[in-house]
Length: 106
Length: 120
Image (tube, rainbow over the protein chains, first blue to last red):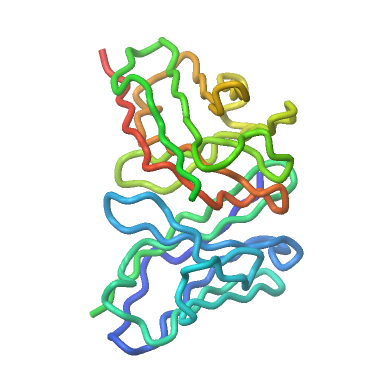
């Protein structure tokens, strides 16, 4: 079955750039999406189809996808961005999520 | 604004069937642009996709759960439902209903989630 791999944690200082990787076999041939989940809340879609932002998502969130790796970038990270981030892809049979990366804003 | 709300028992006994319903408001479940599905999250763990179904009956299920899962759609009530049979403690999780886009099956809108505990 298809698998997506994410590092367990990322730490950044406020105002810095946070980058999250998501790796999977030929992931660049699929669409990657990203979700933000804060404690006790439902996940929120922040990037879809590799690099598109849903309405209401700040411009500091951006995405890319090539080869075997998709990347979510948060520019000018704010304390409110502290959350778990999950990548997701569709392999034409199942929806697959990565294991999630916890962002700590120091 | 689309809203989705899960409902159902919060406690299910081992070996029994877990049944949840998602009520959709602010949009029609009969849209050909979307699938309607379920995702779960065990306490303190990551997200696990369960499956999705279109209003016309096309379905996709997680292979690891396929033998125990049924997702159905009731267009007259603008609801869809999940049945998971023969549950064990490993099925204890927060269950989310979610709308999925036809393109790339992206869960773009989520319900608030409901905790289901499997225990005797």
